Image 1 (tube, rainbow, N blue to C red):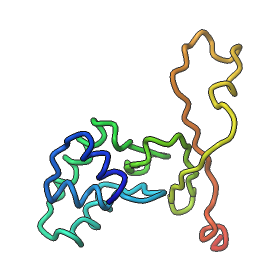
Image 2 (cartoon, rainbow, N blue to C red):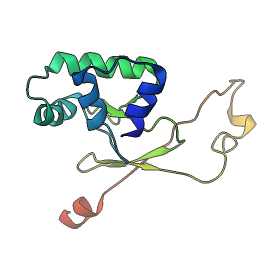
Image 3 (cartoon, rainbow, N blue to C red):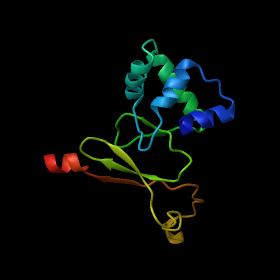
Length: 139
């Protein structure tokens, strides 16, 4: 059983066939699918699943805090189920592939107090950009 499915079960979230398939599609490391990609993969497992069910379920998962929306450089929103492990993102500026990366050190402490301008900083999000091996060799 997937980690996301188990977390949803632990919450007592009603797992319809559609919700289960969507959670299964989102299972795994480095998963950052768009809603359309989730729908395409879900249809392979449950042909009658509608695009509206996918969008509604993704919205519910985001509201529950079990999935986070990731947007990079104005591209389509992607959905990341890896919400319980602190990580940042590495994005290919060629094809848009996203990988989860774990950084070392305290990112909050990396911002000197003199550069906070009186802000009470709540969170840090760092996105690294580069070219994946496939795009780097194609260039």
